[in-house]
View (cartoon, one colour):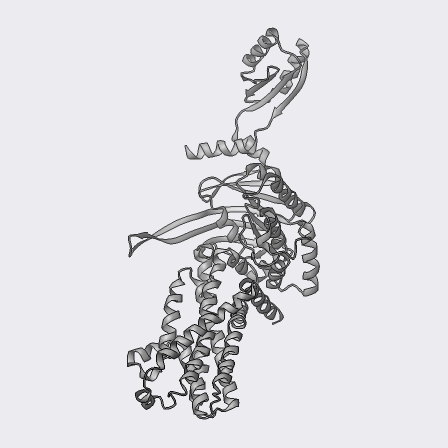
Length: 271
Length: 325
């Protein structure tokens, strides 16, 4: 266990130092989410919410800013993992992946460390931004603090597991760059970051179900806007735990199978 | 000791035939290699055509699984306890990859040390010792991107020693380095084997490097060991003739005629050097004894007499010529 923690810490430190070599890099990470958030907000602003409110009771002129912000807040967590997993595949190019495989370090610890670094790098700025917006717009929605804390914890857990799963996929194959394309924009659209999933046709709802982000956003919005207690969101919580379990099992399986496969094909040095 | 017995590796690959069509292809990269590496010994792997050197190194270091055969590390089969084996081996490659450029030299060593679960105090002492060994003490807190090629390579060596391995696999460790730095690195490598008793497997395209460092050499061609031995025994088994060199203090037509007669008597070929006082005799046997007698009987002004061993480079060129023809 001590070795596991050492590896997580070392990997997180390495990734952090690799990515943050200049304080402006940190600030630049804030720019994209702010612009995307602002664009989404002003796209919605001119439209009437009457039709939407029929399907999503809590979405109206006043709540739209919080509604979109929650979507983007969760999105930043998940998106940062897609990007960091994609960047992690560069270990293959630099030859360092071979050295990681050469060592006795736990592979799970490596990808967990990478995921944690990504979380630390990308998320704090957006959290700061969100707090600022709340204060600015004086929007403090009715919510259950304890359940919100649990929901946020679930969001962190799910996003880390999502990151680990993607890392495992990116480590497994050198042709996984397409996953980046598939997961970036479609995740934003189908998980209901901007547009409520309730308004989607059935096929689009089906796609949305494939992204863990969909469940996290739903959970956060129900807690924030409807002030649901734990009993009311328990089904959603259990679903999230089930998805977490699937993601973890899949990660362990892909890592083990991938390393075995690479040892047979010798692909780990190829890029 | 690392011992590989009848090691084979076959790759099943897919070759693109157009946009959608792919054909299966089977490549036998290594075809039954036997080799041994003892602690304190440096062995060389030299390859001719697609020899299978890198595949062999990767199999020995646990990165690639052999299709068949056996690898024993200190008597333990490599697949029996790979985690234990990983603690005993490490790999150093030439070039500027395999280190993190934005991290400092010390941070790189610390990171790799953590991967091996080395206790913090031990790791700190070891990093200090390794930085001193490779002469990077003063630059330890400078990002690697500001290092010269030679410094990066020295850091690679320190990185390869971070887990204090018993066996090191070095793949072209002096690739692309200037001659003085390459010589410095060779000195480290020799030191590692002699003073630290590391077993080192070296591959290099610089044949002089292999000749200078290796106690034993394996020559691979198309995945097979076609010849093995020390540099001396390799050349002896490759070249059928021996070169005896005679250097005289003076030369005249009488001496020249005498040497011609000697060559005919001994069934040797004479190679005259641009240096008029130097004569090379190529024959099946060493001619030193016969030449000493002739020099004595004719009272010739001897300066030097020796048998010229062919360089490993000549041996490899000769083997390569035979293989390709």
